[in-house]
Length: 126
Image (cartoon, rainbow, N blue to C red; front, side, top):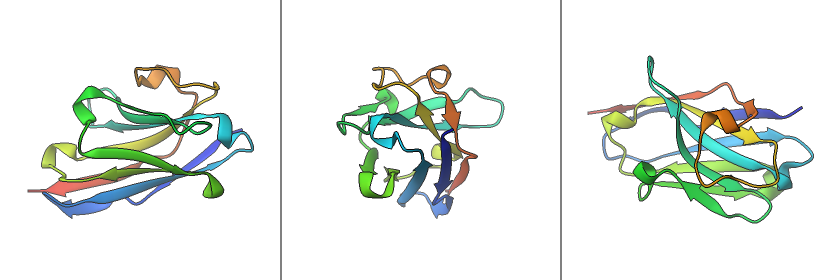
């Protein structure tokens, strides 16, 4: 069973930065595709970025490239999402997810992921 725990959310003014963390409790951590998603109430859960922990290869949704960076610390079984130049429209619940396959897909779709964290709220004020 994969357990994912997100942390690092909160409130930040527009233009600020924030780093989210996702700690994974799973012995197969180094063979997982880990992704970050975000969701605004009433809308679909959108993919932000993903990383295959075995190789470190990263993937980004086209609209998220440039301001968001996904990274990993294998010693801590943790994946991070660094968010810079935040805008009010980045306000959302951010979720960490794991795909129980030994590869990531080029697209980051919620239905391809099997395990989810509880989410962490990010609020960007104007």
